[in-house]
Each structure stands twice: as C-alpha cells, then as structure tokens.
Length: 466
Image 1: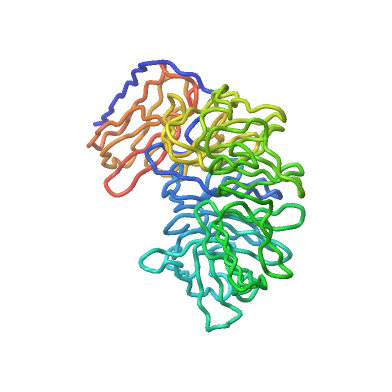
Image 2: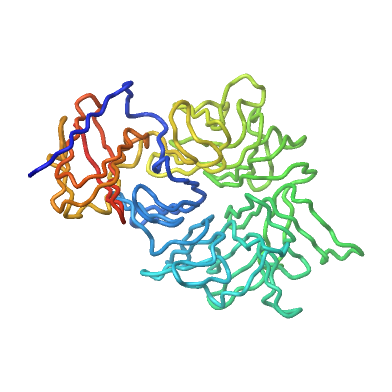
C-alpha cells in the first residue's frame, strides 16, 4: 500500500524579499564571520570565523563560495578562523585552532595544498604569552615583500638570544618563523581586534603594546596600546604615528588613498571615534560618531563604518551601528540595521555587505550573529541533492510539490526554513511514509530549505516556489 502525508503551510503574515538584511547562514547555527578573502582571479570568496555547518555544508570554520554554491575547504578547523589571505599564490588561514581533521598544528596557521591543510614552515611550538590554559592565537596575516607576517597572542621562546624567538609578531621566510622585530623591541601584547594593514608601501599595526629598549635611553619606552604604528622592516622596529593619543585604535583599513582609523574612545586630538590618515596628517571625519568604531568597508563608492555607535558625534542623526560617509556627513545606510548589540566586522563582496558581531537580529528580522545585505547570495549549495531516496516533484513549483521516499526510509522529522533563515515548520513524522506533499500556494515566491532528519543522518533539500 502506498501512504502519503500532506503538510499544509499556513502563512501568518506576508513578507517581502529584496532590499533588506538577511541571515547569511541558517539562524539555528552559531555563525560568527571574522575573515574574508576574495580570489580576484576566480571571483571565489572564502569566509572564515566560528561556525560548524554553513547552509547545510559541514564546514568547520571556513567555507568557499564559487558563485553558485557553498563548499567545504578540506576538513576545516577545530576552532575559529580570524584571517584568510593568499601568499605567493597559496591560500593561508590563521586563528585559534590546533587541528584540522586528524592533523595537529603547533602554531595556529595553515596552508592549503589543494587537497588538505598543512603546517607552515617549522611549525614552532608557540604558547599564549600569559601561559596557563589559554591557547595561542593569530589575529591577522599579511603578505609583504615576499614574506608572510603574523600578529596575535603567541610566543615562541627559542634559546636566548635565538633569532627565531618572537613575541606576538612573527615573520615567515619560506623556511622558518622568526621575530619580526628585534627581541629588544618586542610587541609585548596584541590585544583583541589588533590587525595589520598595508598602506603606501608600509605595514601599519593597531591595538598592540610596544616595549622598546633600543631607544638609547636608560629606561625602556613603553606604549600602552594607544594609537597605531608603522613597522620599519629595515630597522625591525615600530614607529608611533601621530602624538598625544589617549585611546586604542580598533579599526584600520585603507581605501582610495587614505588609511581610515576607528577609535575606542573620543580622542582630544583626532576627534569622535573616527579619522583618516593621508601618510602625513591625521584628520577627523566630520563630527564623527558617538561610540566605538571597529571596522570599515568600501561599498558603492562610499566608506562604511560599523561598531557600537548609535548616532553621529552630535547625536543628531540616528545611525544604529552602521553608517556611510559621503565625504561631508555621516548617513544611514539605505536599509538600516538597528542591531540589538554591536557590529565588529564588515566586508564587501559583489555589491553585498556582510556584517558580523554580537547581535541576533536586524530590525525585526532574525539573523543570528551574521547578516548580509541587500539579499542572500543565490545558488545555495545542496550537498545531498543526489540522495536517491528523496526527490521533489515538481521543483520548481507554483504550489503543490511532493517528496518521494522511494526506499521507505524512516523519517523522524522535517524542518523547513525560508530564504531568510526563518523557521517555517518543525514537524515530527516518525514514519516510513512514501510521499510528503507540500502546499506552498499561500507563501511568497522564493527558495525554501528542507532538512529531512533520518535516524543516522540528515538530508538537505531545496524547493523553489515561483
């Protein structure tokens, strides 16, 4: 006998697709995005952060988008990714991990060899500067003059005065990792949101603590992490940019001939949380913003700033955590994202903005900790598409569609999400029913994601309503 189960979807309220913030991943998955690399040759993007599954793909903190679908990059990693770059044609990732699949890493940086993640150079046994149970980490990678630089809370105490010793700032020369500064001029600490940026042929670093005993004085010179620095690779030391800083610099990004600076607090010299550097002078950007600026992107010809602010520096223009600079004033983005928290990262890809931070919604739209504007990337991957037991007929559909269960597999549950990541149905089945019929007549056109939970696996499908 042939059995069938009919599921009717009841639409409570209509909603429109289009120019809005959307979740970039299933909102049931913890997703924090802290790194992006765009391969200009292939137009592929790599996203890194802290997540397990990404739109149905088991990714483990790193995922690739090829313009059509998402796919895993090897086994991924057992902890977060904070930086992804290419160096001499090879893909590198760094963060807080110590393994990829069964492979172990002493230093949390890995190179993709085309099929697997491998250790880099001598893979020195680094430890966290404060010791204890804290794991070492790398906040940022940068490729410069055929060398790979790494910045983060990591220390390698090679035999003194071993040239391979480093404190939080290291350089790789295709063979070994060593200190990027003289041991007397050490990066004593690399704080959260420390990063490196290449501008006008020099490396600039922010949110670091410098101890310099090479200044020909009787006592060491110490910076408390305020301001930002220019790295001198010839002298292998740091030079403070600007004077009289009284705040940490959190954001440091270069666009269109300027280095943009996001600040933790108001600086008496450099303005309300945001300024720019032209290689000589640091100038405030208008009235600034009323709280911390943490990151920047360049989107449709304008600077985008994100952080913890809620308005401009005069408290006259509401700007909930994200704003654009038109050269004269700070303005809201065309679709405001009044997040209930703060935004720590922003990236631009193919006229899309991707944000991540400490929030779970944009306006009334649930997003999880990461969101994308103005629409989701199309062509979401369907890793189990060829699972022979289940097929949608028809797909696309204008209303009714059915899933055939030709092998009579025992289905425990069916879960359905819309293209914005919102849960539409969570239905217990507990049956070997041959057919499951979907009624989508009352729903908006678009893509729906169906997870079929079996006893020992999950089959992911997509259904298009037109």
